[in-house]
Image (cartoon, rainbow, N blue to C red; front, side, top):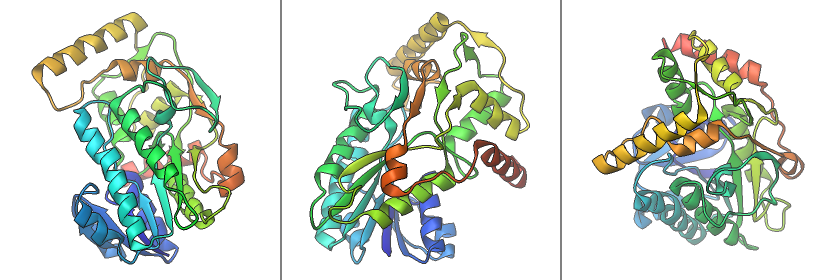
Length: 333
């Protein structure tokens, strides 16, 4: 395999790069930054934006498989920034991949593409869940638009697939894990009411493996061509149980203090208004989206990925937490 990984310097993108190299693939990375650690492993590293047609064309040249993992994430920011990175960037990469003669395009999507505005209890949803009329966030809306472009591009000469891993975590430069640990140690985390809903998570190694399996299975007319798949450990747990396991792995105290749901929602609304009026580029410490996410269930049926991709999570949540704990200790964190 001669692969291109966009966003290879990111948490999941980097894991995909390392897995591909370990499996003997020839790997090129397109990312905004420079990552000497990937170059040291044997990857060819190019700097550039996925929305830059010249950079995309240069990166896709001579590649047979494109893993498009680059995106703008988060729940805060200007719509144009999300659009340029997620929608325009994906359109540019699709065009460049097809022009270069690539045969396979594996897109890293998100379960957020099916979340309706206002929140919902997501319990055992499968791929028949429709795109909502209004999305929960700018991130979700633009990722959904990009996913549609990817699936529509599937043809007899160019095979595409979209993967929707939920809450990817594990050892490494993981923003979610870092945020939980930092806020937990600072005493800035609070449970919301008595909610402790079931959520899915995806261990980093299994998320990367899903991308490898998708590329292996992907071909014209294959079962996965032109389709999207939910990816997780298939082991939903109460959300605060997961948070406290992460804190325990870091040697931090569990979250026990609570804030009433109405107070949390009101605080989020005030913070959003203050951030918007100030023009702050950073994300508020609490948003209404986060409040809804922490008080609703989010777990999925991954039987389609098991059937069509041969996906089988190999790391239990407990084992993953042990690995996270060992990494945190070795990294001095």
